[in-house]
Length: 355
Image 1 (cartoon, rainbow, N blue to C red):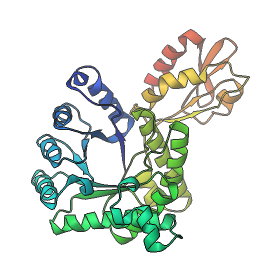
Image 2: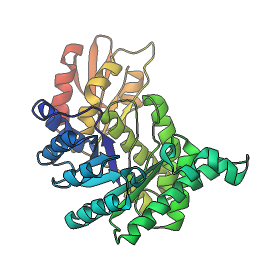
Image 3: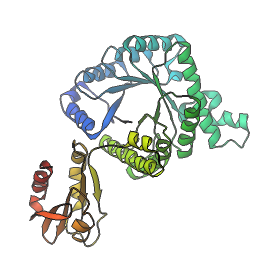
């Protein structure tokens, strides 16, 4: 199961020299398997193409409207092209993209969005077909039908190296559309709720939509689309996969659970209350991306006081908490270091390095 995120800003050649590359490599260490870039013009294609030569993480070029941008991107080591065939243009232009992709052995993601359906499948026309009783099921069917049309067109051209995404901002539409297509074809699916919202709302909506699909074995790549950082999208996706793995295991679906299960650091933390003697919120903000980037399969607890510290987190491999003016670091419930708050980060780094 592959986690994807998307670069949040326009990219320039200056960015390649000022932090883009190390940030991308950090995303890879955090568990990101694909990084998508909007490529609105040929100038952007040059930048993303150059970047693809500089990083180990596979890059996806997201192209709309101009097929020539897709052709230029495929002159570089781009891992995948995402297009919406409905807005690329004529059959001849689509054929040119498919021929180049076949020549380069580059897969194409067909992206179908609820906001850019063909005219006859849009909500106002669905109501004329289905009557005023048109429901979410009709919207989901429209997404699946649009995807099937694109797949049929690709089949006519003999191109099968493809993945499909059907995204809506609604939970029910997203779940049902993917269930429909998964029941009709074995084409790989990229799943996610589009425009899911800010951090908290977006994680809640994405979890509600993605966990049922994942437990049912639907989905090959996923993105949690947040109005937030790429790092938080990756962390959210990892946690959603972990939750789905636990539920699949509970349901006796061992093979599905094994496919979804993610390694790496598992972080638990208390919510904080008036007893806290340790700034867990500040510590988490400093440490979370770093912890998720570690190549260690361990559990870490970040707790606010001695009540929630060693006792309630006795099961973890490494934990940190506070009491009075001191910070305690513990392993499996046993305190191994007592330091001042100013020494907490350095001491935690040393203990973590010894694992």
